Length: 208
Image (cartoon, rainbow, N blue to C red; front, side, top):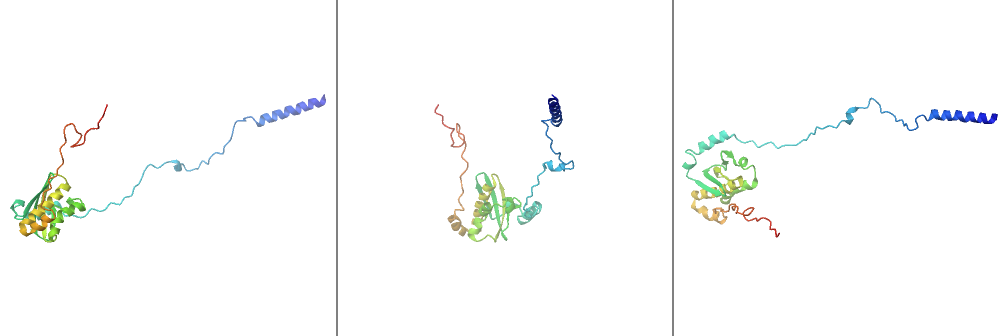
């Protein structure tokens, strides 16, 4: 009997000991992060910096200076000049005056490269008649252009220059005509038709 009591007391003591150990069996402890951890690392920066290189615009003379220059070169205005030609393309009209000079091109009191936005094709259009005859550095060209867009104005200027060169000499007709520079391009945008989406585009056909 003494043995049984002692075994019971030992078992009870062990039970109480185990209950003290596993007081919170579901609790798990994790090591806390250091309090001095930099908080700024968790912040997301919302500012973006984009570095781009922009080409510096080409230096050009002020419009007022060019106006004075054109008026000094063309006393009496465009209509009073002798070597003049008018060119048209689409809705664009260009009046062109030629004077002996060094090859300057001034359109609406602005440099041609600036006015035509440096487009190489448009700049080529306006110089083709002079290059054909070898006069690219022999004449200064003064232009008043209005209507249409820059592409139409450039082609109108080309026709105007070619027609003005005919007044310099009648012998220029043959080489200019051979290159097709004296032909007025009569193509224009075709008008929209009733019942169609555009000039010729019809709405989608539906059978049912």
